Length: 240
Image (cartoon, rainbow, N blue to C red):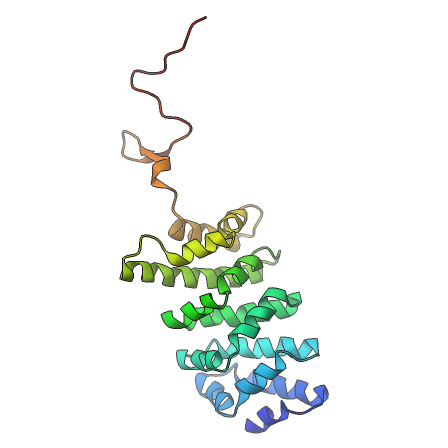
């Protein structure tokens, strides 16, 4: 395994490409196999390859990292400490679609298994804005990946809100500031069933309707309140 990592340093893409594929296949295994790659210096080499001139190598590097960030929290921390999150965010924001897709997987997997502190770091690196922007891509698979990440982040924000007695979920506010609310609402129109259901779930769980917009009817069920309230005694119409 260490030999494959060493070959990532080779000057020729003809050698780097199969070596990267080998490393990528190894980290699709269990955490023990992933750890061997990490201990062999694989993350430092992947950091270099994220800026490679060859597009396919940048894509393969993101794919490899997505399998590593699917590992345990210690391995996610190794990814953070190696400095891999900022360049991944940059690729997620501005790279070609196929690279962006792999970068989205890498970040989304990290939000799924990460600690609250790790997720805070992802947010500081601009994760929310990047994932909200991905929702505009007309590909249900990558939309689902972005929704997974946002849901993981919002869940952690709700936990933070409860633990610290905050009036609002801080991450919900950041999603709104990134125009995420309108994009989530937009996914309810014309989206595939899975994307639709996931968007509705996020909206109902983390962006509840303003209580001032609801009134209770006689049966105790909430009803939407449209327009101005009717004054007591009814409306008085002026006669000409």
